[in-house]
Image 1: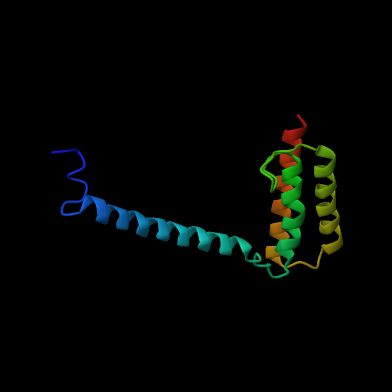
Image 2: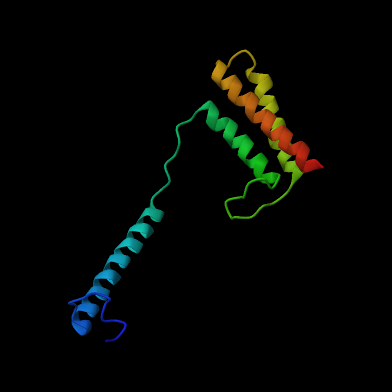
Length: 124
């Protein structure tokens, strides 16, 4: 008895194995084709919001500090660029003072606190 006799009892090794391999290959090709078409799709564009504006300043600041990876997978460090984004968030805070909902103000305050603290740590 060979070690392959128990693989799939009752399977005709020559024909059944080839058929099973063909089905698996076709299934894999279909899966890969589905993944390729999913990659070809245009990413969903988020709705404009105050949160999006904050994210558009905070995320690049964190990337410039090397805290999170850039889209190319690299961790770059440019504290001058990080400071630019942080200062821009600060201007946003000044210009919107008194015009934000409590949630928006909290979101902006938290984002500013986080990026400023990360900047202090990155500057050491």
